[in-house]
Amino acid sequence: MIRAVVLISGRGSNLAALLEAALPVEFAAVISNRPQAAGLAYARGRSIPTIALDHRDHVERSAFDAELMRHIDAYQPDVVVLAGYMRILTEAFVARYAGRLVNIHPSLLPSFPGLDTHRRALAEGVKIHGCTVHFVTNQVDHGPIIAQAAVPVLPDDTETTLALRVLVQEHRLYPMALRWLAEGRITVTNGVARVSGQASQALLAPIPGDHADLSA
Ligand code: GAR
Image (tube, rainbow, N blue to C red; front, side, top):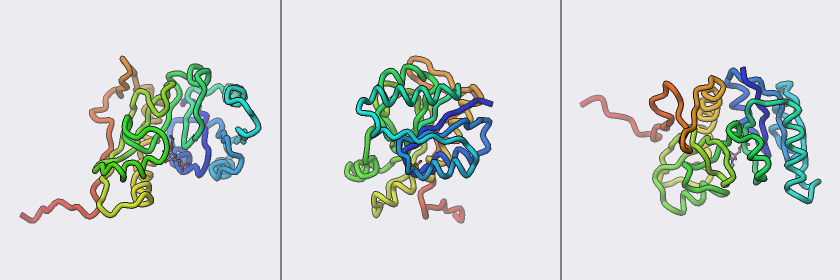
C-alpha cells in the first residue's frame, strides 16, 4: 500500500475513477485550489480528508505552493497525484516531489501541451488523439511518459464529443498507471519510463461502429 495525496481543481471525475478502482493505494487527502471544486464533495462523501486552499488568497505563486507543500507533507505521501489540477507549479514544488509527482493530460504528449487540447487537435485535423499519464518535470505537460491511451478522431467530432471519448480513456488509464506505481513496477532511465512485465503501455479505444467482418 502506498499513500497518495490528490490535487484537483474542479469536477474530479479522474479522482472518482481512482477512488473507485480499488487500488492498493491509501488516499490520504484531496486538496483543491478551488474551494467549490465538485471533487471535494465527492471525496468527503468517501470519508477522505479534504482541504480547500484558495490560490486567490496568495499574491505570490511561491507563497501558495509553500502553503500547499506544508499541507501535503503533513500526510507524508509516497506519491502526489495531479488529477485535473490546473495550476502551474513552482520549481520548488516540482523538486520536492520529483519522481513521485504524476499528472494526467488530455492529449498524446508531446503533442498539445497546455490548454484547449481537444479544440487544437480538431483544428490540426489529427486523426488520433488521446491522453497521457506522466511524471511531472519543470517543463509544463512534459516528463517521462508512463502510459497513453489513444482514441480515433471522427469526421463529425465536436470539442465535446472528442473530449468525452478521451475522458472515458482517462478513467481507464490513470487507475492502471497508479496501480503500476503502487506495485513499484515503474523505472525511469534517461527520461524514459518503463513498466516491468508490461509489453505495452498503451490503451487503444476501438473506433465506434467499426466492427471486423468475420463472415468472409
Ligand atoms: C481532465 O480531462 C484532465 O486530463 C485535465 O483536466 C480534466 C479534469 O477533469 N487536465 C489537464 O488539462 C492538466 N493539464 P476531472 O476534474 O473531471 O478529472
